[in-house]
Figure 1 (tube, rainbow, N blue to C red):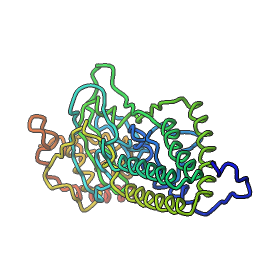
Figure 2: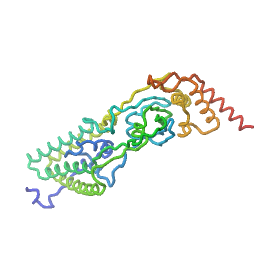
Figure 3: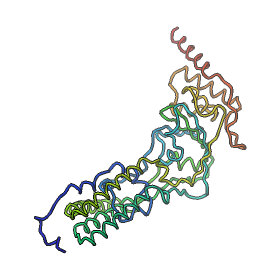
Figure 4: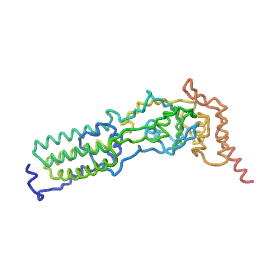
Length: 375
């Protein structure tokens, strides 16, 4: 091939090479779920492949903001696990709302959560592969050696990076069969919303208590070696891309512009579209008064009435710390237990909530606390 004998003086480093390394943020957003699929190993063009060449890999999925408290067990976590967040879509809850859901497994055995078979991220891999094949064919037809080498280098770089980042999801399973307290969970969000979840101990441990582990295909040492090789291939591919003919450079430019736009669109889609969570079944539980509330006090009272317990409020430091609030929480728990609220196991619904003027009770306790301090 003539391009190998022209010498260093003919080298060009055109600006089109920078298009190959733009778009890191949109690539990183979906990289973790994409690496669950075998399509992640396809030789293809990927915008900003250097975003996937890191010195270390995430050991767990990124958690979300919120406080998880066992309604009866006393457990607490100051974050919401990634899969639990996706399953309940907690960020859509309006302020001061209270939602009840029951989570069950659709089949027995170990958890089976994976990337959706033909989710948006899978189509991104297929699109990148099609563009690689098209550029490969055009490079051969145009007898452009530099473009041919750039296509091969940048395409197989994605496979190399894919091997290093390929992983399987490992959820902790309960092994013992010892008796445990009821496993219902309450999630408190920063905007004052509450999510009450009815589930068994096996589901609670998988989704809410234990972090999701990333079990990678290769060891950390092999991954670093692959990352080093990927870095060298990326630099070599960009240099070859800068020395391709004008027609092929235009082809690469168009490909990366389209891919960047596609990755940005997919990154803006709901993340649930990329995950197959059909292993879990979520059923909405309705109750008197509906989900919306006017204040945090009303939302907290409804949550206590539904769970018929206020222990989780104290453990999670959900309410303000004062004598007045402590007295109100204690009274709220007593009213909840005396009323007809709580879960109806047979009908799988929340029974009618107790009739109690929670607002007047809080005002009474606040005035009583203020009077005691004034003495």
